[in-house]
Image (cartoon, rainbow, N blue to C red; front, side, top):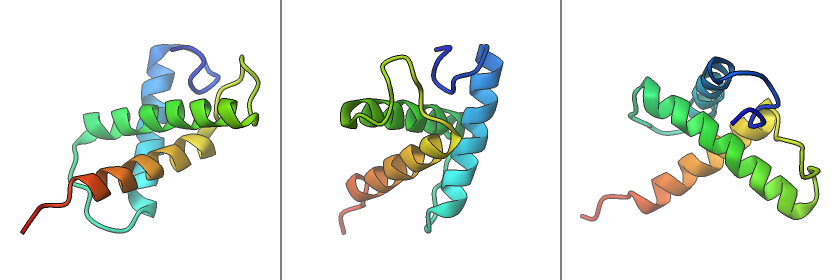
Length: 90
């Protein structure tokens, strides 16, 4: 988990994941009811998604991780996907 944000320990990953999740939730319109733990998971998952896609397309080298902006964009994509698949049937 050290290379997710290119930084150090687990506390750094949790802090940046939380901030990236908050920014993503603020930028995506609509209501996203989730607590702070899911916000952290959202930010970390967004970074993993951005790193995976970036490596697949050739934007990142194999030992390079997505940065903060990539994590936010990945988290927004995950929020949009979650909104598409969790629509309640009427």
